[in-house]
Image (cartoon, rainbow over all chains, first blue to last red; front, top):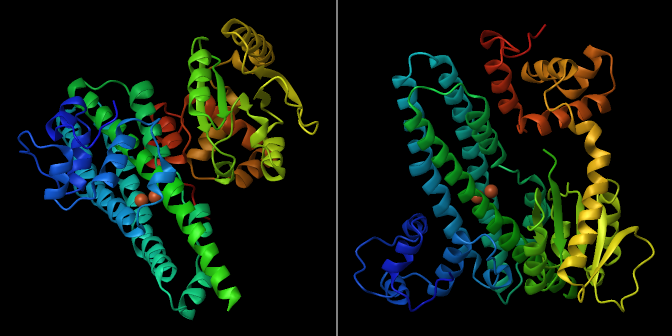
Length: 245
Length: 199
Ligand SMILES: [Fe+2]
Ligand SMILES: [Fe+2]
């Protein structure tokens, strides 16, 4: 189902529970009564068109209007990406850590195996943190500077200097597949880990890992297929603008 | 179990969807990626698939090169109207036409999958990892690089890479930390001895 402006926000969540995490990133809180998506977005100062494309792409992996997504401002896109990073670090990762911790505590027979998982995830957490930090400290500021130069009438040489030190091409090449390790972890738990007594926790952990993996997939898709081509286009035009001078 | 994988490159959403729904009728098949334009082909992506179905209209000098490169292990199938003349530069495995019936498409694909399966059978039989692979896995888990493993075992780096690919395919684990856990769980390495001794 494609979510549109006029349906009730409550129904969006009823039809797909996972949309909750997207709402959370846009700062939209529960308690909407019968208000529509449009009304709720206005009330929260959220660009409704952007919200719709993001939430629809999140729910349906076949739905990905990248050309339309590229028309939104870099600011809007990177804000969303940034909030998604926060969501991983402040909510998802601690939740998974907590689950693993619980597994360690409740498991007597194969504690050492669970400790292995714990270490694996701990390393992963660090890797994810490095990945998102690099984006926040280098990539996003760069894309914002490009957008600024792209929109301004005067041509400022500093952007050309900036483009000599970094380019979206570099990001594209260095952007690594951060989901891969989560898939490995999932496979290890499903196929190779001697099943702990407490299968409830184990199932819950799998479920959370799977969700995080899907979420990061969606996130990386926006980075690679929306942000990168958009900035590449802007870089071209800026270079042209300067060449003409 | 052998699974035939597909990549579809075609502009029209309707055609892509239609084709996918036909492919999915064949057991053990999977469409792993779809592209609606040639530009995206530039992005580094995982192109390892058994088949690529592409609309020849989306080929240009650039994409032709990319497809040629991956066509060594991948069979390329065209998707077009009958009237389109195919570029001679690519070896087309077969052609699917827009006015083909479902049965004829299924027949074409099944034949290809069948052929490929027989070819792959040899490498598919031993699903368990071999003794040699365990040796390699052990060294990976201990933190050695491909080059170091090659030197240690007196084999070429290329052979190490091939072994690694097979290990990953058999176990479903891609990354070094993942392989390390597998090695510990299966007592291939000792938990207290993870990491090569630096001397
Ligand atoms: Fe990111
Ligand atoms: Fe990223």
